[in-house]
Every structure is written in C-alpha cells, then in structure tokens.
Image (cartoon, rainbow, N blue to C red; front, top):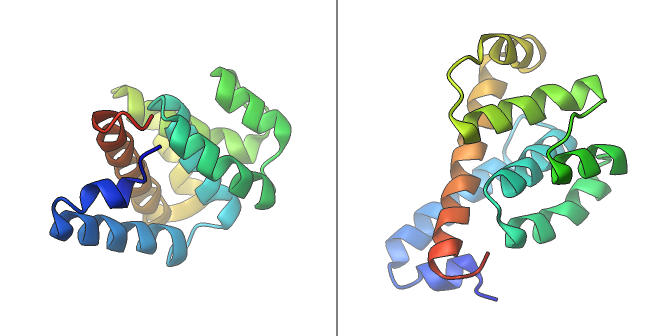
Length: 140
C-alpha cells in the first residue's frame, strides 16, 4: 500500500503543502475529534477510499463515533443520531455535488457556525483530494 505523502515526494512542495493543510485540519480545528473523524470516514466512503476508511475508522471509534453511525456511513444508509446526521448529510452532499443543500447548510450553520462550515467543507475537499491522489497511485 502506498503512503500518500511518500508518493507525493515526487513533488516535495506539494507534499509539504498537503501535509501542512492536513495538520491544520487534524490538529488545529475547532471541530471535536468526534465530528472531525466522522466527517473524514464519511468522505472516505463517499470517495471509495479504503486507505482513509481503514486509517480513520479506529480514530472515529476512539473519538466516540458509535458503531451504528459507522455502519450507516459504510452502507450509505440513514444516520439516526441527530448530531451525527447533519455532518454525514453535509459530507454526502458536498461529495455528490448536490445543489439543493439549503436545509443541510442551515443545520450545520446552526450547530457549528460559519467557522465550522468552512472547516468541514475544507476537510471534505482535502480528504477528497487525497483519495483522488491515492487512486492515481492505486492505493485505494
């Protein structure tokens, strides 16, 4: 299995920039570990990236994401926990490029504010980028 940053070292500047953004997302976020890891594993499923799922699922469990939520995310089903469902719906919407996300955005804005919406959106973009890159390297 290819480690993404090792493969990116063909262009060290890209590896450095990606690692820096990843570090901000993972270690300097206003999101809780629970919410961040839930968003990451949902992005992994939506982008069909086993590497991200396998790397972050244990972190999601450690952060308190329930097995029921993780099973729903993995299966593409409805998430019954109301706190988790807004995150999962936002990630799915962003990954699927659904245009009609008004109520999803409103739910996330009410809970996390503009800063949280920005962080969740950048997180989805970052982990989507990593999934695409790893697919190019046959790592997913």
